[in-house]
Length: 408
View 1 (tube, rainbow, N blue to C red):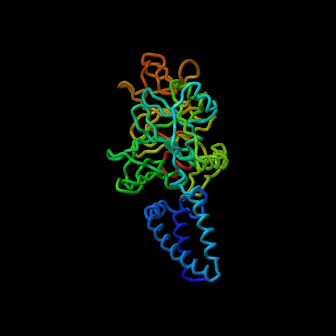
View 2: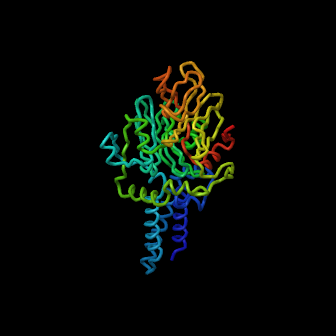
View 3: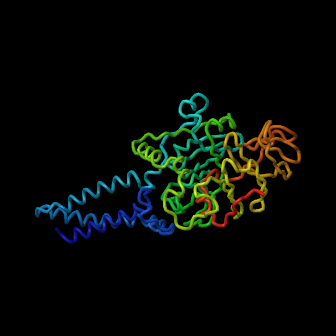
């Protein structure tokens, strides 16, 4: 058996594995590279593949010569490795497998009720008078959907390992982005825009590498809720339904549901994958928090069911905000306290319409930020971009200087 053929085969295998292992959820723990190293490899993936192709040709020629000499072992090894690698790329290489199904529709009323249970968790987006719910189990595999909400073209983004959801305007410097998943760092997805070469970290909405380094995408808040509760709060909502249709999509979606359902993740004491950096011990790693970052100041608001405040008045980055939590429906949201030229202070209310009342006018407000009774009835609080019910470990890793809110 030719030594040249064996060396060629080993080099081809190494080049292919170098572009697979750091970008596969099944193997990322084995290498656990820095974010910079992952991006370095991804930027040079075509060179790796070109090198692998040249080495494969050398190995194949040597294998065919060996077959003529009655030594088919190298050819058998190449065929087996090629089949295994192709399957691994097809089922586990993030840039290939994490792509949304090709078709989707917006459903209402009975049509929506036929495809979703009342207790299913959705990601809710509201822009003006338009509200849309996205099924968390459907978005968990691709990590994103593109949709138009009102007049906004948005990318609805979700990373199951952090339970982090947000919506972006996929535009930088006036140019639309064509974002795709490429890898995960510290259990959080990284997006890539091939035309511009920019890489964006989901949990910061920041360009972490590329020509627009340091710039941020415009974010919109996403609320996590049970479908029944979201429908109660937003009766005009539509349901975005995009079930997996291709065999691979069904296979990966099933794998996620079996391996890492959110109930199993939240019951853990540590993140699913290894992380680089220390876990902040101020809260349990998998505790739910609302994460707010305004002008570089980050704050985490704990959401433990029996201790979380229903209404929190706070200042973040110089802006006055209120964190509201509807305990009955287990819905949390963040709003500006500036309303109609007034700076309001809010208190939780136990009975009657709404979940909060402002101290100045006594107006009652519901969990959507709408004034439902009082002199300001009909006014709506401006929603503040935030992360809703994400895991504490992820917020603290990506926002290491975060303040942890503690009730006085």
